[in-house]
Image 1: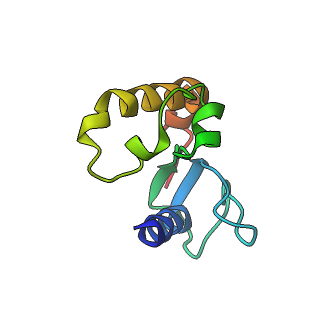
Image 2: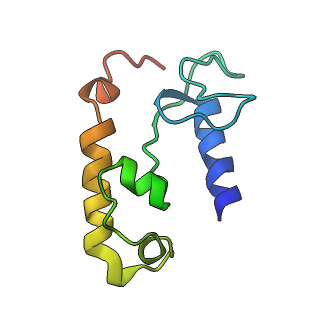
Length: 106
């Protein structure tokens, strides 16, 4: 699943105008502002990831959440914790200018 996530993220950034997202790796970095193989971008790409590790949750201010509860794909019992994580990510990383589509001209 992790490999599929990374591949899809990479493809979105190749064909899309990436305006937010963490580095993918040391070779391609975050691809924000990259040109890509096309004359024009096909979509806008915004990526807000969160590391569901003890350190990653602590950095979000969610250090009281047990990582193993929220790391499973079917973490139904942890919906409240997942919502807290999502709110923390939105508070820290979401910016209105990421959604300014007047700037995006495919």
